[in-house]
Length: 205
Image (cartoon, rainbow, N blue to C red; front, side, top):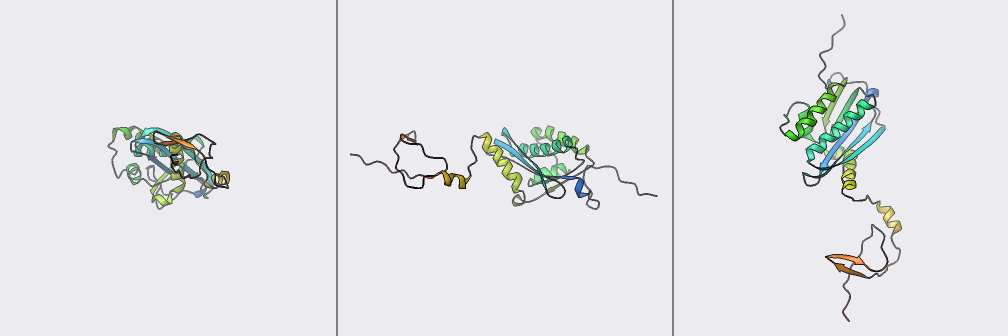
């Protein structure tokens, strides 16, 4: 007589992992600069063999760090459903989120309760789901994407150091400028972004 499976709990069984080829692996992260403050999430998606599938990131405006973490989880869940994945493994460096999803901690924040319930509904529609906590240095891709989202939302362009060096003048050049409200406004040629300058006050004649 074949062994009957236990009722679906929404989580992978440690003794019975899902076939790796069918798993979508999502490294997720979220952050807020100020908590609450300008926030964003990042999701780095791989297939069961570790091949990159997609990168997701979004600026969320002024939110808390925990809300941003949950937004990353929601993005991973929605991607899995939209692209036909039935099994999802989530990797997060937020111990709070992981323990709340596993039911170890309760969600007490009214702000998080709605998004938590939405996440649980999507989890319950999957055949298998797993979530695990890792240290931040093991979640670098998701962290990078979350910071990129916050930089975009705050109007900070991402600068490639090698590109900035290539565009920088190869010879020392003196330019004139005026200090106004504590900032230097150049009155001569504009300098390329990404270079460092030294300001010396002009001698009074």
